[in-house]
Image (cartoon, rainbow, N blue to C red; front, side, top):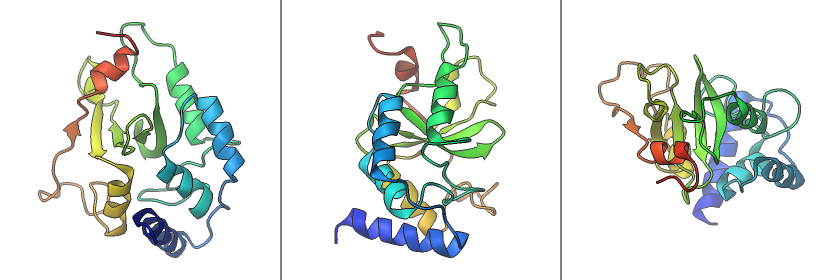
Length: 187
């Protein structure tokens, strides 16, 4: 059993215990269709969550991960909506390849950077008091596996008793935000 296999099994057990009934896993073809719509590949671990655990509905907050695709609010529809919002050309707010996977409320998203090798998990906080959209992006965990491990042990800033917890580190700004918001070919 690989580390990823073990992680998927533990996530599936925790998701089933917490949610009771989960949506059916997404068929592999749905991942392929989502990638075609998005224009980029979904990290293998995220694809396995959708195809082996459930098509959303589990995770650290509220209704858990968005379903991948289909009817209603999904990871794909949220991405396309954020990327398609009218924006000033000099101040886009949503970078290419960053897939929203969870709604934290108040306009905040948890998102996976599908262009990073580890699937960096980011927090988009649009309520930051700044004029620079890059200042709205923070690293939640350096990789999706790390984020899942944190959830599995009951950690994370999002836990119900985590607000104001001095033991939790302040989220770090996403260093790539400015360059990724500028788009390809920007200097």
